[in-house]
Length: 344
Image (cartoon, rainbow, N blue to C red; front, top):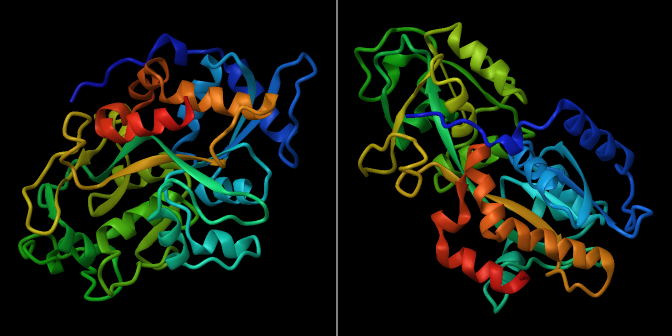
């Protein structure tokens, strides 16, 4: 797999990135609508996975000043539900737990009912906010192992459940079904922590339809971290380690670590790559949440509308691979076209 160089657009001086972070802190507790020069100020916050894409778009979008910050997917969804951001980034979907945190009693059945009607991108209203979900790109999650691991180059979902969940857990590599000849050594898991949308999505994808429980972060086997660099270093130091993170980060470090081909419930094993994204099972949509479909009735709403239209445009989507993700326009052209028709 070839690691294509980043676009020159993403090689902005450090000062730009620092400035964006300072703006994120400045507007952390409130939303303002005017920068003082007649241009709207927008606040965008949430997922660390979406964050580099949001930063890249903010640098290219000229119709508003955008303060981009991270904090995690749950933070991004919370910021929308509480009216503390115009754009909430998330790598996992909004759910009842997000509503509960802000004092709204909304069940999954109510969410499903709201999305089964003519507006499947809308969520039940809460605190005067109607969360609206946009899929802007796709991320490929890769399972990674130490380069000296020559026994786990392919793993099925069932084998992943034996490694990553509590019931019927294989604590040693030789205890994984089909890997009886592997080393009789303890499996060490280094992966995203529980605050990460990546952690949430991985377990939902691999084990969400079963009665198995997540292997708790902080156990003697699951060592969670919010920092991909930490995860990478721990796995490269231990040939019995395994973990997962985004394909974009792997591509930047492919000389240090190996990926695992994955099979979903009896299907063929698929190696992760940008080219195989539509066949590879562990892929996830990257979301931006807004309060309703932006109407353009005022300067701020118009800026949100223009920004979302830019993100969906050919120009905006052309930035997605530069950051290391898969275009929504390539992954699901029909969905992309439908979203464009709603906001552009």
